[in-house]
Image 1 (cartoon, rainbow, N blue to C red):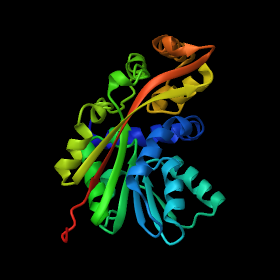
Image 2 (cartoon, one colour; image 1 turned 30 degrees about the horizontal axis):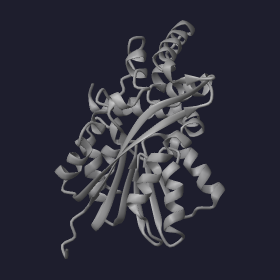
Image 3 (cartoon, rainbow, N blue to C red; image 1 turned 45 degrees about the vertical axis):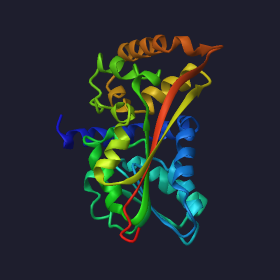
Length: 277
């Protein structure tokens, strides 16, 4: 699949997923987000560049941490995600956020080397070439700045991973086939080092995804995640087949109709060389 087509799939897929994603994923992604903020150590008055911001889980907290004298430039490929972020920005009266709909592949004009920190929460896995995203973070930073990115961990540590082959057996999802590759071994760390980041640190987080019923689980995994666009093409029979097969794949993690599914995140931080260091 060529990169332009994959980016178009990602754009429309996340447009489709936006509202469900915002409702069903925030709490389950919070361990990765907390680790990112601990590693980023944002200070008041700093400028932050965020790539693949989604509906603003990280953006809003970053804006609060840098305060009125700081700034957050948040970017995402999905117009619906940006619209949700704009709504929350207005609701919270956070005037220090600038939100732009743009893909990582076209971000050069914004990544101007003036930012103190660059963040990407669970977005690099979706790029046709994840190195393009790491490069964009590098280019956004001023010398001495730091980048922090989170991805899903190794496939065998993410017990929900069968959603991809199950959906693909019915309707091609066109999601990046290397979805879990950055979470395997030191892949993300090596990508940072290849770009030129120094003092690179890795934090691997074992966690559990919690869903209080199968409706929330299926909503998050099918309608609010990476296969949302493919799900729009399901007829009733296909939808039922996908749901049943996925529920079977995670049945061992169901207790009293609640699902507690093992998962893993990898968070990496790197620093851009400062000429005076």
